[in-house]
Structures are given as C-alpha cells and as structure tokens.
Amino acid sequence: MKKFINAKPNRTATILLGLLPFALLILVYMIGSDARLAINPSDKLLPSFSHMGESMMRMAFEPSRRTGDYLFWQDTLSSLTRLGAGVLIAACIGLLIGTLTGSLPYISASFSPLLTVISLVPPLALLPILFIVVGLGEVSKIALIAIGITPFIARDIQGRTKEIPSEQLVKAQTLGASTSQILIRVILPQIMPKLIDAVRLSLGAGWLFLIAAEAIASTDGLGYRIFLVRRYLSMDVILPYVAWITLLAFLVDYLLRKANQRLFPWNAEVNS
Image (cartoon, rainbow, N blue to C red):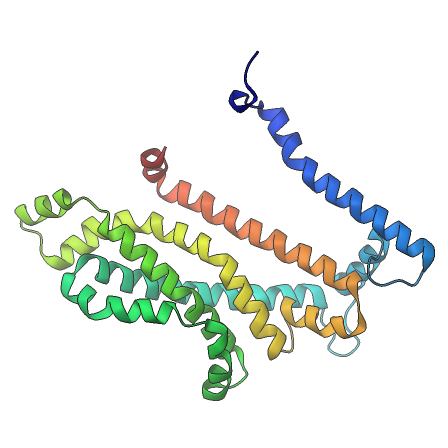
C-alpha cells in the first residue's frame, strides 16, 4: 500500500481539494448567519448573502446622492491608482539602490548600513510626519506605500545582485566592458525578473499601508469606505469590500506572475 506521504492528487483532485476549504468557510458562515438572523432578523454581525448582494448592487450601480459617483468603482479606482503609483516608485528606487549596493562595494559600504536601519523603522509610525510635511492629500498616501516597501525591494534586489556569478563579471571585464556597461548589460537583465518577484512579495505590505492611509485621511478608497461604514456596523458592506480587496490582490499578483513569465521566459526555465 502506497504511503500517504507519497500520494499525489491528480489535477481534478487538486482543484477540488483547493476549493474545499472555501466551500467549508461559506457553509459555516451561512449556518452562523441563518442562526443569528433566526433569533434577530435585524442582526448586523453576520448579514445574509442576499443582503450583502443588495448593498453592493446599490453601491456599484446607483450613483451617490451627494457626489453622483458610483461609490464602489470610484473607491476601487482611487485605491488602485494610489497603490500602483506607490509600488511603481518603490520598484524604481529599490531597483536602483539594490543594484548599486549589490554590485559596487564602495556604494555597499556607504549605504547598506543605512538601508538596514531604514528597513527597521515601522512605516506607519511615519504617517503623522508625512501628514505634517506634505499634507493630507494623495502625496502622503503614495509616499507611505513607497517608503514602506522600498527597503524590502532594495534589500531583496541587493541580495539577488550578489548572487550573480562573479565569472560573468570577469568575462565582461575581459571583453573590455566598463562599469556602466556591466551594470546595464550584464546585471540589469538578470535582475528584472527578480524585481517583479520582489514587487509581488511586497504587495501584501503595500495593501496594508494603503488601507491604513485611507482609513486615517481620505475622502474615497476601499480602506476609507470600510472605516467609514464601521461606525454603522455595516458588515453587509465591510465583508464584500474585504473580499473584493482580496480578489484584487490575487489578480494583481497573477498578472505580475504572468508578465514575468511572458517577458522573461528564460527565468522560469532557470528556476525549474
């Protein structure tokens, strides 16, 4: 008899087993919701799926009486714009710092200790400072995301750069390549797929900083809406918004992974 540790599910079983925990969570929620609503039909803690659907249909397809916007889509657009801008800035700065500190010993000796110290500073502790310095507008929210994940990306790229075989650098120098040519034509192409991986790993923290900034000072956004309706115990809005954020995070990660495979197919072959 085959040992269980050696047993591997086929493709169909893998899909079913992956869906099983979600189905169980939905079932447990439905049972709990039905039990609470049976006792108190106006209970807000565990709203029914139909109630959540009605609330989201209203927010997604009925314009706001105050602004005329479709709140759900406006919140989504605002949050994704802030997240995208912050992550893009962090990726560019992290790539520059990580590549230079990972490949140039003098730069590494000068800036690596500073990078280590900055990475230990809790980004959320800097939020009041950002509000004071740049105000409560979009800049402070984008800056928090960038500041929060740049050290992680930079340190990851630094480590990846140091992993490049020294033989490649020696060969390039033997062929007469300058420092800038080695950086651009030898190191950078090998680092780009690693950058996408670093961005993927940092997105969880990026969402955290985005929600925190929107919750404290904003007039729209997914995080703003969640913290706005919490005072009314509107779980019929909060739960779908949390699920939507989770879905968006999954989709962004999926698109980045597919982009990495399409742009740098050789990287997948090297890692396989």
